[in-house]
Amino acid sequence: MESEFDSDYETILRCQKGDIDAFEEIVRKYQKKMFNISFRMIGDYNEAAEAVQDAFLSAYRNMKGFKGESRFSTWLYSIVVNVSKNRLKKVRTQSFREPLSLDDPVDMDDGSIKREPPSGELSVLERLEKRDVALKVQDCINALEDKFKEVVVLRDIQGFSYEEIITMLQISDGTVKSRLHRARVALKNCLKKYLGDL
Amino acid sequence: MDCKGINEKLSAYIENQLAPEEQGQVDHHLKTCQECRAALHDLRKTIEYAQGVEEMEPPAWLSQKVMAKVREESEKKGILRKLFYPLHIKIPIEVFATIAIAAITVFVFKAIQPVVKQTEMPLKGVIVPDEERREKAAVKDERPASREMSSQSVKPREEEIVREKVTVPAAKAKLHENVIRESFSSDMKAKKEMRSAAPESAGMFKQIAQAITLVVYVKDIETARGKVEKSVKTLGGSILETEPATEKYLYTVKIDSRKMEDLKNQLNRIGESEAKETDYETSGFVNVRIELMEKRSN
Image 1 (tube, rainbow over the protein chains, first blue to last red):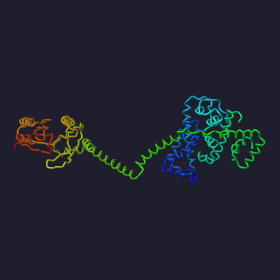
Image 2 (image 1 turned 45 degrees about the vertical axis):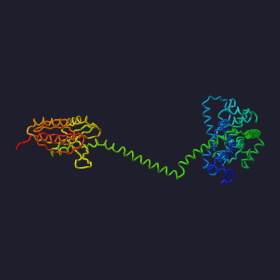
Image 3 (image 1 turned 135 degrees about the vertical axis):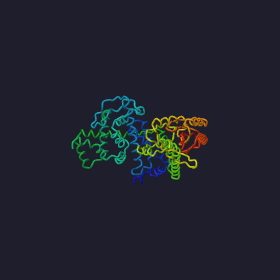
Image 4 (image 1 turned 180 degrees about the vertical axis):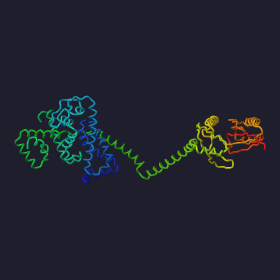
């Protein structure tokens, strides 16, 4: 069992016995990583913060359901990925109700980018960060389809291993590789449009 | 392998995810293909850009807010657990709830039972088939039709109606049910009886009508009639119906049951009185059928 080597093993046991202080240790340890996964997937600071809260609360409620079949951190990250995906859908539904200013569609091989990233609009992100490459990367990530977005965020930005991504997303190794390649190509084309030569 | 095939493997190539043989094929192709080398370069730069994205700092309040929600959740859980989870509390609560439900059920059942019984009374009328009625007529039972009145406006039918009736025999202490079959000569007659009885009924289900027949043998019916009517009025009774017949005269009177004995005495003074049915309630009004018959001298 992997959890035998899990650095959180003791803390998890305490959590499962109802020790709230132990859960607070978990929150403090993983909140940054959780937040960054969520933020890169949603692309909105406040929405990401809300998603992370929901994810931690969900983890607390289901703590006894964690049987150690994967690393605790992997289990925790899979929760935040799912919560963020759901929140993203909700945010997208809300934004569809507002008028959108769409630029020319990005020329994609696989059609994975549905519209030009909203870089010309005043987003939350733009108010928080300077208009630099990182922002362009985020904009391009935002424009990816969810299934491509999640693999590129988890692999290239968060640096998870293929095995961890397979566990988190519950998809096969081949699917991860295929989606990752298509996501990178889409991201490359998007960045070239903004930055010219890479 | 053509450029398209190579391009599809570039992502895996960068991360050394290809089999050694495929890795060699891509290496070989890249040496000769400028376009694919450029694609590889762009892909590598893209990955570098993605990996170079700085980490964001979460809001300072995030952990506090999470823990506030967790503590709130924990308190809710604690209350529910205290109420339902430990068996030493859960079982008594369930037992108590079961007993309470059973007690309420019994109470409600008992509370509504009398009402159900009473409302069933008028519905217990049974239509007697014509054959049976003819048999009864053949027997010529001289028992007069008793007047059973119900406060409910039940329309009598042509058919013979059997009604359930509770009577209190003078000699007996307990109640018993007696089925009285009453025969109506005509529909109109029955309707008339019902109309006359209806205003007197005070309670919905209280029965005031009783079956008492007093036969009085007199010398002269005409003379006796005046005396009978006077006696009834003197005793506070009322004449509901009169019916002249051959060699007799019939009265249906209503009188306070406490004055029944006085009525009998008065009738004895008028002629020879004979009570055919004498079961009646000792309280309330009773309907009495008085038959004035001419005494035959032999």
